[in-house]
Structures are given as structure tokens and as C-alpha cells.
Length: 255
Image (spheres, one colour):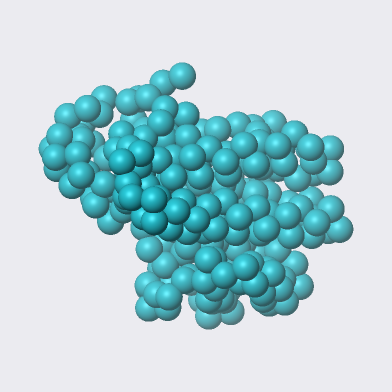
């Protein structure tokens, strides 16, 4: 089992879906977890319910707001005096940002998506790298998507796919630039995961059965698997895996 005792980990978007399972896995491995949430405090508390009170800390931040990320980072560092791992998970998927969308809808979808999925993570990881350079190293795990490599199925979600490609490239560049500074950076690229986001997406494709029929295993990825994978990466045990993109899609997309 992965042992993360003594590590302090910041997880963005930790109140639901993949983020909630990451929080649970990190807590089970012994980490002290800073759970970021947007507006769902109850969801964040539920995700961290089994973590002892002295090993969990909750920070609210609206990532659409320019000032939110510096405040989030400062609150995270202030809790224990340092952060060892950052899990860059928070993201939104908005519809009506495709080629046929009205100009106003296009502008709104792309603006909000880039604020939450790209600009906020970029600011957060900038703070993290600066911090890690002072503390002797650290770990970044970014949740991207297979859509960053293969494109999206529904063109209404073009902004989402583009944003996931952007954070993948950002994380890869950090891995290359700071490898000698003991800063490790990994990308996890899930396929179809059993979350509310994927269920809403499946509805636009004709339903769950239609989506599952196109998957090699005929089944969706469980969020628990991703939580366990992120916990393992947070251990830093596979140093030379830094910079890699780990595809988690049940052999449906192989490259």
C-alpha cells in the first residue's frame, strides 16, 4: 500500500467525482489533505469524512476569480508551512462552445473554461514550482483527458478538450524544465469515468449504452482507480516516470 505519511497534499476540485476519490485515497494512505472546493462544502467534507480532523483542511475558492488562486495557495501553505504535492484536478465542461454556437455563447463558454481549466491551474502551478524550488522539490499531478490527445466526440465541448491539452502541455514543460530541481510532474489522462460529468456527456451521445459499446472493455473507468493511481504518483516512488502521460481508458485508446 502507498504510504504518504508526513506529506501534505493540495487537491483542487475535491468535493465530487474524481477529486473526491483522490481525497479518499490520499487520506487512506496517510497524507494530510488540503481539500479545495468551489461551492460544495458538504461534498468536500463527505470526501474527507474518514480522514482524521488533524489531517484535513478545507479551502474554498472560486477559480473563475483572478484573485482566488493566490489566496488558495497562501491558505494551503499556511496550514502546515509547506505543500509537498499538488493535484491539479478541478475543471469544468461546458456545452454550446462549438462551431455552430452563437457568438455570445461561444465567448462565454470559452472564457469561463479557460479561466477555470487553464489560467487558474497555470497560476497555481506557478506558485507550486516557486515553492518547491525553495523547499527542495515537490510533486505535481495534473488530471488531463484522453480528449487532449484524440479530440472530443461532441464538438459543443471543444473548449474542454482544448483546455485539457493546454494543462497537459504545461505540466510536461514543468517536468522537463525542473527535473534537476527534484520537481516531478505527471499527467493522468482518463477516458470515460463514472462521474456526473461523464453521465451528462453520455446523454448528448445517445445514452450510456451507446458510449459503452465503443469501449474496449465495455465499461467505464471507476473514479476509485484514478484515486489510487494519483496516490501512488504522489509518493514520488517512480521518479523517472516524471513527464509521462498515463492513459487510463481500458484499452479503448492506445497510442
